[in-house]
Image (cartoon, rainbow, N blue to C red; front, side, top):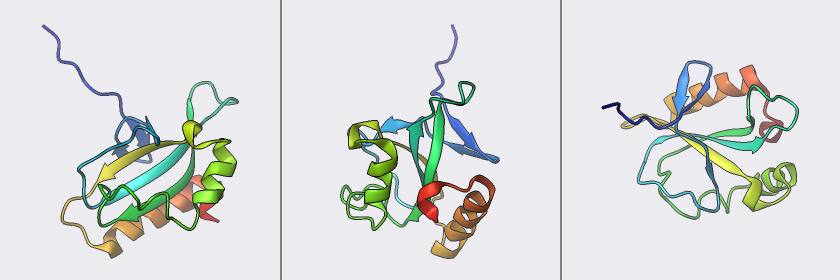
Length: 116
């Protein structure tokens, strides 16, 4: 009998969780990196396009995304909150500096529109 494995998404060598609709997203994760995504109608081999990378001390805080200063950019790029997706890369016991260094690397590599 096979083992069921959740689909993941990779950015550089970082394995993020399966993208979920922001409207339905719920996690118990604390420290980590997150990526906001939209469906990519142009690149068929990669169904999602990263529009923002960020880090948090508490990904489980239900309000931290909607109160983020770049939330309007995310909605503008997605078209609506229903079309916005999120994936996370947990970094338990990490420092903000370590998480920010990973975010800085990913931003330089992918150039997401809402990180500018």
